Length: 365
Ligand code: M6R
Image: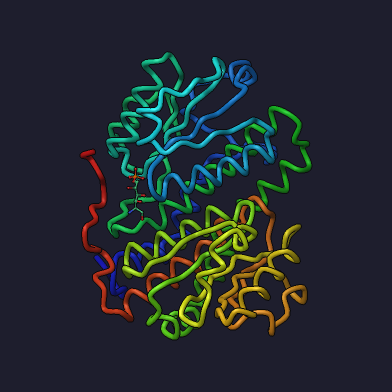
């Protein structure tokens, strides 16, 4: 089943162009200006009445929820809140009466996410699911939802399921945006951007050998920081989680500008940073954060899509990803982080597909 791959995680990383294609199939309108979903079970009038969306999930799925918050607020202008499912179920938060819930779970069996769904339904809210496991409990109990169609994910560290969740979140932001103020032209640009993703992901995967070589040079470190701003912040959290899970290296994700509020004290030759710095409004600010880190002898691996705006000398190692519409940049930036974590863990001799202390699906509290 592994074919030419050494681990399921590696195989699943390389399956992403196909998995992303599957998540999009049949989900754009005939005029290609919006997305469509068969199973949401709300009509346009009901959607118009929603004035807040609450997303719940755990682990990697929670990171996908954070990206959904950025995308939906930006393109659809609907306020979004993100909750750890495990916290939401005991928190008794006051909720807006016109709120809608989304629960996100690859397996569709995570107990905390399932109980968050039940709690929201008990209070009378409509709950939609984004799940991969077909026929899973969350898919059955939710009031509607979207299947990811990522195919089985066997590696404990989630990879292809995460990028499919990001893609579906982006497509939801388009769908909801087009019901509000997003223009036909802006919608079409987003559709084209989503359609280009599998090809762009393949281009990044073509750099796997280069990323492996970088990973192996950093594999001896015991601490890492992952930094990013705006929609790159949840991707930084995901990069740190991936590295922790499979290589047992201590890693933390932060919004880059938070460095000077504490974490910069950690910087030394012993603590490298992976900085997500694609083109965009905050690039110059992130470049200053990188300079501050390097001035304290911290090595920097930068992941950027910016051309000459990101000079070759600005970081110790640079992984260049394609420039694309901002609605798909979180997906593209994730790929090098998966490969970095994978190759660092392999270099350290870790059991990548079955990391210690972890189960693929957490069905007990
Ligand atoms: O199946 P789920 O998406 O509900 O799982 C949620 C988390 O347990 C899961 O994402 C976990 O954090 C992974 N090991 C991440 O790689």
